[in-house]
Amino acid sequence: MKITILTTGGTIEKTYNERDGSLKNYHTILPEMLTGLRLPDLDVSYEQVVFKDSLEMTENDRQRILAATQRSISVSDAIVILHGTDTMAETGELLNRELPDLQIPVILTGAMRPYKFRNSDALQNVTESLLAARLVAPGVYVVMHNRVLRFPGVVKDRENLTFVKA
Image 1 (cartoon, one colour):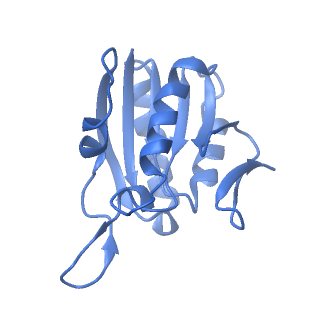
Image 2 (cartoon, rainbow, N blue to C red):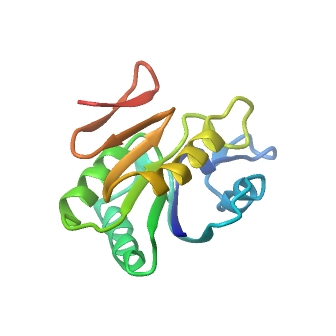
């Protein structure tokens, strides 16, 4: 199975800078995350599309994510997008609206705590997304916290720090 992972930054890929105490998106940590997983029959490729906190994403950034998704459709059995959780629903709604005739699953995932932090949900969410990519019907989804939610109508539940259907 061929899976393309598009990285866009967000909390999942933030790294702590000991020199200045900042928490920022410096570079993708996806290869490090995948190294610890047993994925014997997956052909995984990745592309860094945007690399910022999702609160800083612009409409142009979302259009870049859409374009990268469109380019990847013909060479992938599924697409996973690592995305910041604050505006993940906006990107999901855009993809759902602009890609009405999908023949593969497009899955957005992220984390409430960076991968590098203790008790992060990042690796769980990436693992669940890779499994969901094999199992779900074509469409646009958020996969996080043992949930698979199909667009439209997926929103962030800020009180419980997860995603739900509206």
